[in-house]
Image 1 (cartoon, rainbow, N blue to C red):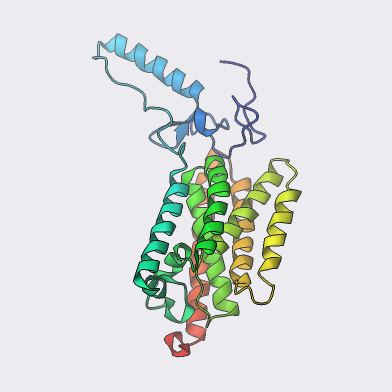
Image 2 (cartoon, helix red, strand yellow):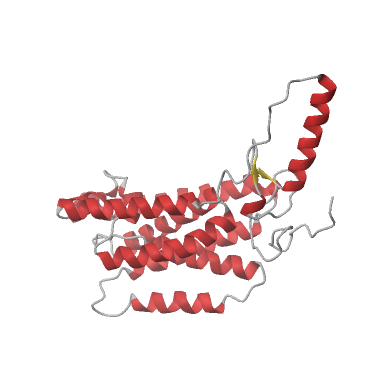
Length: 288
């Protein structure tokens, strides 16, 4: 086995210039998407795959078993940023359907606190509806840029968890601060991506000042009069992005996977409970 770095500094052990939060399930090395091979549980690095393949071949020769069995093909998962692609595709389709329906789709899918108790799908669907071509254009550009980076860095399921937790954070902030206002768009989730990426960059020892400036400027725009932007959703998304990014940065070890999942589930439960409390406090649909 080569004497390359194990990647404990947050870089792939074979490609030091590539950051990653994904660890080999077998040995714990940090690996980028190019170096991953899907396994029954998690992913394995090339070194472990070679060891397993050699062991398999030795066992097959010893037992006389027929050939033809292969290790799972590399690059099967996560390489094409599938979740990012799906999020963009669904958002575009929903926007087109809303355009064709004269706004009816947005009425049924937008996030609105007074209806969330009886129409809980709005907790999620509000992230996929947008008001104008500029709205969806800017949001999907941000998802395309940062989604691909973070999905490669974290892995698909962690990226999806981050996206929707940040979206729920935006929902909660809206429910607490402006419960009578319906909101649409993925901005809360996107600001969560910004915040989480900042935390992860800092945890890996990189200078993330530029990212902080970008996030701050975009946040300030939401406070300008006449913009009709829900700054509440932005703030909520940022808070959850920071929290979730911190969870990811502190639970990278393979042995901490259970703790990581537990903390993410706890975040989701607390967010939904908070939204439920806000719904009850305003008397549900009565506000409408």
